[in-house]
Length: 377
Image 1 (cartoon, rainbow, N blue to C red):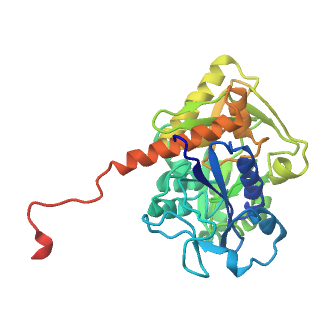
Image 2 (cartoon, rainbow, N blue to C red):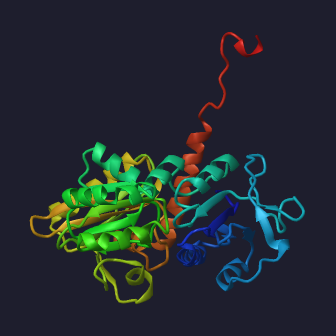
Image 3 (cartoon, one colour):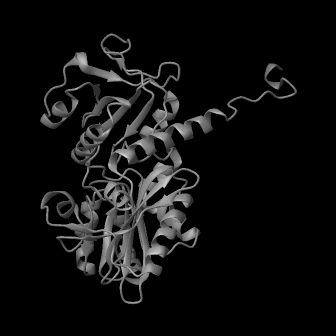
């Protein structure tokens, strides 16, 4: 890093139902980055997908005000540019915004699902977090569940189907849910976070309304077995090829389950860190968290969520979040703080991991010269 300040783009907002949560995370990350080490470039994406950068981005996104055309920018998929470009002039934005690394804090669709990661791969700019495959699988609860099952990781039983399947197969799907998942169960959009669109279903008669809600947010739905009397446990992972796990924490929800209101609105949920688990159960959670991280081919960071039944201490892997909430009071940084890594140092390490991964990728061959020049025949 020498005396050069790394130019760090913090990317937040986005075309997602988690837009507002992303803004809060982005603001917190920008505040915590060490200004002696980094020049911070705020990059916002509006709800309709327009990009803009500059010191007023957060206020503009929060207000919902019309975006001045002069602020509209884009990030070209050209590795020789590596900078934001003004849409008005088609030239590098002013002030210059060449970027050394990007921290995507885009929760949900078009940010956590591999789409933005694909763009960042094309730009050649190092970025924090999982790549295209890991992000896509980490976002898709159905694909994620399949990989957990294929690798023998303990996870609640489930049924999944599409919007097209439901109208003509409602009775059959309901019977399958009853047989495999039982009641209560949880109905979820396959691709979304922050518990948006999720319902707890106590009986078959409630299933239809829950599916209708989930289909408002995705064309695919997953129904999962409800784990009776379970406590919600979360563990943070940090690393690339040799990931390590934080201490695990317990979520005590203000509602029947940890929904959007309990997470962000009513302020009555709280965490217990470290979680009051027997030592062997804590070890089991941390080991499974690392295994899940590796199975999904993740990088940089992830928060792994579990359901644990105190009676018998059975551990179920619930899901992985590749871009977890990142405010100063979010579980991911709080878990690392309890494990001895402050918020600022955590960001330093994540940036280092992004640069490490970019260096490794740069060593790979991107061309092949065959012995016979068949393509000239």
